[in-house]
Figure 1 (tube, rainbow, N blue to C red):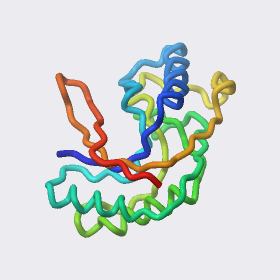
Figure 2: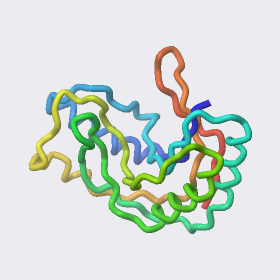
Figure 3: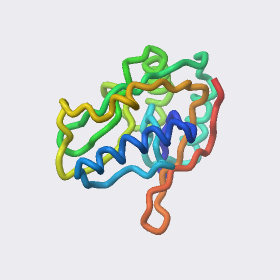
Figure 4: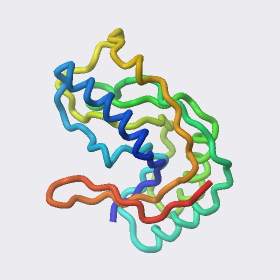
Length: 172
């Protein structure tokens, strides 16, 4: 089973994120768009996992001792030419959670401590990137989201479609 730890969004936030994706489409940007139901912010990708590792991930999530907090989704950006994403403003609680999870799980998983860049993936393999000067998102961005839970997620394919399913959610 393929697992990751994430912040999931409520339907209001997913609708706003979908509006951003629709604006990208209106610019003529095609590619592999993330489905609305799959919008999330990955805290730590775990990859292929066995039952022992799943239990270790659940225990680590349960030990997170951070109070609920706000994040700000601030602008459209990209990772090279392969991913257009919604960037999250730097946020100390997110960094603390990432560092805690990494330290808690590095011996159970083969994970590397890469720089944490919180984002929500909108488009993979776009045909082109939006101009950084295009101000077509100003009525939507930035917006805040109240993070009050962290989820252990299963990534699977059903009928060729990527499905993200929460296996365990811990309230902050």
